[in-house]
Length: 128
Image (cartoon, rainbow, N blue to C red; front, top):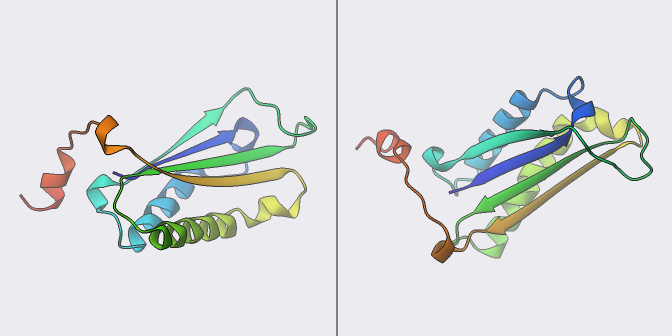
């Protein structure tokens, strides 16, 4: 159950194709081989109100949060995070040409005792 959320400052609308970024992250997550296609969800949320660092209007951010189920080793999680962060960093390279952009990623494990799920997509994709 990998859920990937992107929160971003509204001033990036004209500079980043968020649909393409979501697709890139989805591909990268699947390329790890650790997650089923029917479980991957990537979505972006625009932050209208924000204050970043010294409050210059050109300051922007993307904060990425990846919630995953238990069962992967620390090394698998680290490799996944590094692969995603590299792919996104490469995609957003022009934003780092200015001193006004911040990017972050955090991976968290979902507590299975406190998580409920129902998924009709899995059976379809598994051919059942």
